[in-house]
Amino acid sequence: MKNIIYGLFVGAGIFPMVCMGLEINGNLQFNSNEVINDDIYINESVTIDNYGILNGTIHTNGFGINFTNYGQINSLFDISGNSEIIQYITGLDNAHKIYNLYGYKVNVNTTDILNMADFLDLISGASVVNVEKAGFIIDTNLPENNIAINVTNSTTFYIKGLPSDLSKPLIKGIVGTPFVQKVDIDPMYDVTVDWRGPDLYLLVVRWTDYSEIMPDENLGNYLDDLRDKNPNDKLLNALDRAPDRRTLNDILSKSMRTNPIKLMDAPRTINTFYDSMAIDDIKFGFIARPFYIASDDFRFIGGAANVTGKIAPNTVGTVGLNGGSLKYNGDYDEYSGVLYGGNIGVRYVDDDFYLRAFGTMSYAKFDDVNAFDGVRMVQNVNGIGGMGTADAGLVYVVGQEIKLIPFIGARMDYASVLNDTNMDVAARAGLNVNVDTDMDGNKYKFGARVLGQTDGAVYTSIYTDMMSVADGVGGGASFGLLYDDMGLSYKLELNIKFEF
Image 1: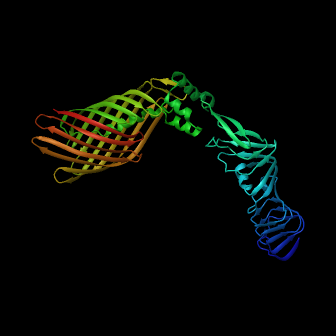
Image 2: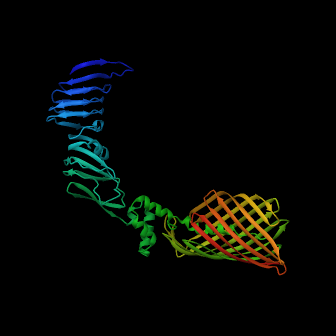
Image 3: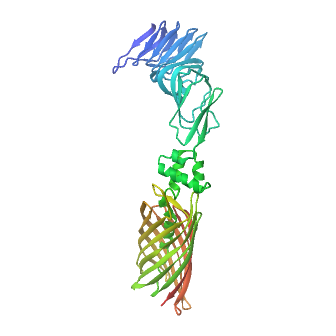
């Protein structure tokens, strides 16, 4: 090598070579501590082992260059004549791209396993690629390959995962027959290699024998038993359509039969509507409340019967029974059932302060449904749900008849089915608007309520009510909307009351 102009600078143990130009007349190795910023002139066919950083333009006129690139080559190339440039890859340590070079050859001979996506980027400027021996990991959704890759039977493709679009080739342009090994393919799929000329496709069959493909054999047996009982079961239809394990597990987590605690989702929503029941300001009496609750997935026809009365000045207490008939028809499950239980509450309100506490317990009996308890199929599943709330607020009297009551509070919710138990606690805040007026010997009430909870639930309602003072008989109606884990649901309630 002849240096036209040569300078050597020393700093911090690094020795960059800064030159106006380098003439290369023989094989050369650039070391890892070298940064070549100057042009390189090739005067004969050479082999360059580069461990450093090449930045200057490389000029060759009819002379070949054999590169092994352990470092970084950012050079521009000035190529003329019949100059053959070959990059040799012998391992992961020199599988580095040569930038700004086009129309060259790549030869690969290594026992290392390369990533195919990285390799396709490396050869993007090449015109000929020969692989004598190598392993390639082929992940899903590779970049487009428009270069013929010549391989031998000493080349192995390790296929990991499945592409999102099986109608397209996994990889194109493979000339030769590599050995194809499938790794990390979920056992829910049977995968067959299909060569169509130089393009590799995958033929995929989705297994539905769940005792064979589920990690939990008991769960797999349960699902297979469902198929024996009802081949058109909507849960199985959804599972059979699942394109991947993540979707499969998501469906299983949402199904009430494979995640039994979710059987209590509808009863929990119904309990929330129970909490919205008014604690009426009567001396002592009986209140009957038929109501209808519905969402996209369930319908509930039920009612409550309460004994209510004053237990202290400005304080009203109530205790009663509640229950009804439930029908559920969701994306993956359907069942019918009955709910029955009791409720108890107390309310204090004057012109300054508002206090309210309410609780309910419900026993749920689910019919026409079985569930997986972690080991086996269980028929005639039952559940228990409970809910308690406590609120406190200030009373703002507007005029003679309107009370604005902003409040804060907390809600506890409990559910238990089979071996599953769950309890949630949420803070909440809301506003009551109450209007009381007397007319012609009757008491009229109108109002609205809105609240939100830290668990994401939002509730709003309106009501109207009338009571005949002389007869001690009255009634009313209310309408409420609730958004919670069950989505949007509504409640229509009527009531009739008798004051003794």
